[in-house]
Image 1: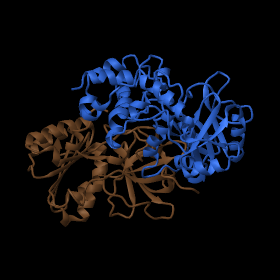
Image 2: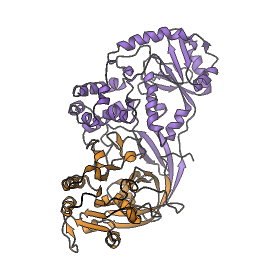
Image 3: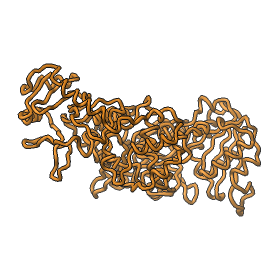
Image 4: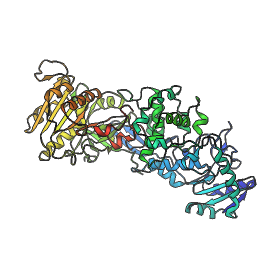
Length: 340
Length: 274
């Protein structure tokens, strides 16, 4: 295990940044934390987590796929991938780190999405254990330990030091190249970890029990009469899907600038009315169907196809951001009332 | 260029046939003059005109043919563009996608009953001609095909001149309303199927508008067919056709990857609205 004094954090960031692009969670001018390309003067946020998740770095909100040149009846296909350079992302929380496993099952399953794949191969993940998990956190429900997150490197921080443990070969390689880090004892982080565990145990949403969703039949959950009431106030704004680290639905669109056609993909949301709109209409005509789709996917459909793993990591962003204060916790609690 | 499943290949439309007032059949070849790929009957492909859009279409031709045909009804943005283009136009194509009909396994050796409504003939057309090509692998073939009018029957010349004249194939055509020059059956497909009172030993392949499928299925069950004997195809909006964009999700299945062909008893385990 390694460590560096907190007052020297900038020299650590500078050393990493000298090798690869470095992203750290920093406050923007509006005071919102987001993963920011580090340059001299970029300061680590004091907020628990970023407004949007770390998925942005692997599955950006908009990305170019390919270009076409169209002239009369002929078409030319032209390479137009956004470049993907090796990068390091520092300060990923345990929840977001787990979300990469979920995104991997989608994008890296056959046929592999090479855009996502190249970012995953290029991206080195440094996690940061949570000292002060928030009341909206419930990663423990999904077996995630925020006091000892995964990643290529795991970091802990107290007032004096940032502690650093390489977990993978890639992580070790980076560690070796950073002379600003000094050796320290593995037990250095025990106290931080213990303090974090104490808080994690007491989190109010910790007792959320989702086993009923594994045991009840898909159609019984789908046909639950509570969906109407639960979705009644949903505005269909899609905020939950955009801040969600595991939401990965996307749209593909063409932009014709008069010289070339740029085909790009961008995030989409099953909460939107035109998500399934076809020439002959939509099969999800009201917000109830769209709302139900999102939660059924995370709680039933995804687990059915992935050995019972839920499509949620308990980051709590939807709890914080939904304008009508609806969220996956309320949904699961309400649905459980109707379950045997 | 670095490849990706989302990057299509170039194709060229080498022939366009006008079938009905709103259906045309497009022949698509690779720009090298070869068939773009080999498919299983019931599988689909993504066709696109850059700048207009990309959409999924079922492949109408049999895999035994040296080309890919797509019978496409004009009803939206991409299809309207396709209907307006001319022979020699390049488009993009990627595929094949989906599971296709189990032509070499569950359907082999069976008496087959095809039931199609309107443009619903498109995916079944591929299976029918595949079965005609390998005629000795299948039992008796019955084809029930209905449309709004005689003019709306897709590829009527092939039906009349080939399917109707082939031994071991019975074609039963119907149109919604009486029409001059039509001496065949008049009425909707569901009632027609009940009137024809087929043997219940047949395996049914059905494709058409949801309302036709709903009532025809009720009729088939009344005749004594079981849901395990009936196959149909689903259609939902798609963007990737790779099981990733999340759009064609129905229950825990993706129509693009797990479908579009489903046996009705499999569909029973999925929500009937999505």
